[in-house]
Image (cartoon, rainbow, N blue to C red):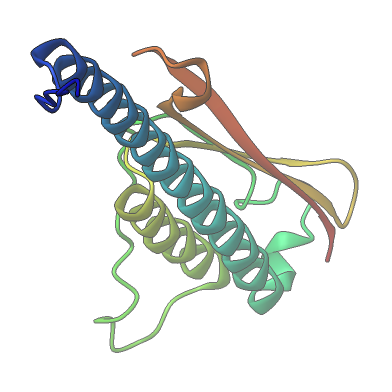
Length: 160
């Protein structure tokens, strides 16, 4: 009779199994990172949408100023722009419609910078009641697997 001796796995087989496992774990980590960055991008787009509609509702609440030819609601704000607070909340005599428009813009700009830091906003008026709101920001470029950034825009066109 011939006796066969079984020794089990060799060291090379174990190392190959560890290599395959390591490659799989790196792939999962990369997939998780891409997923997190995509979720962050979707969150920022959602915030931009909510804030654009918030701006429209502020204009509708003060439509006398919004429908003016030289409307105070037409703005072009870059990151780091500072707005003056008209402080309508503490005035006992109240605010004029123009001061209320400036208060709306001041509050909205603060909300935008809190939700999407480093963003910019441009509001243009096409005619009497047509507005275009563009909110721009940059986010990391997860889809390209690079460390660069990519400019993003959210545009809302609305008739008051």
